[in-house]
Length: 136
Image (tube, rainbow, N blue to C red; front, side, top):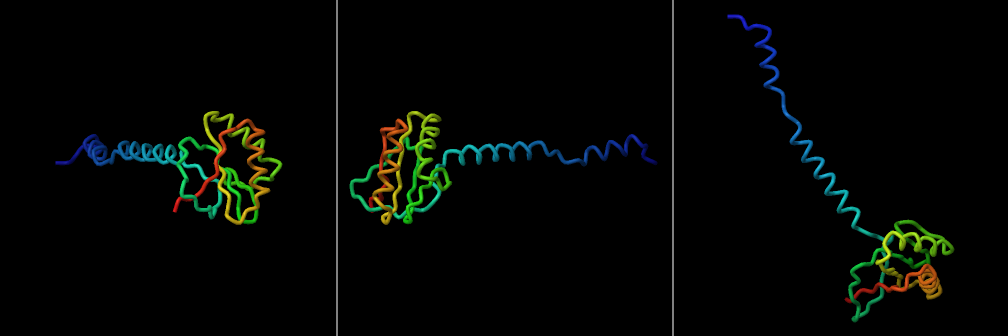
């Protein structure tokens, strides 16, 4: 016998693939990657830190400042003018008042640049300032 038009339409509906569970999984993965990426803080460059056998880990460091070997100052993956260090630290400290400033200075960076960043952090109202070192 011949199939009616209604029976043929019903067969087509049953062969459709339900994409809702797959979309749910994709959205959950997207949320996971967004959340984990927001916890990773980087200064913006790789720094050759000096060795210190007494180095300790700072838990709540949310402001990372890097000073390169040619005395460039990097905050939040951006090269910062030395005059803009204080306002940048003030803004980031306002976002998280409990956080500390960690300065990652290269071995070849000038002490003058390091002191400039430390003074800018103190002038911004952050007194928990640390220097990053490797304990190798």
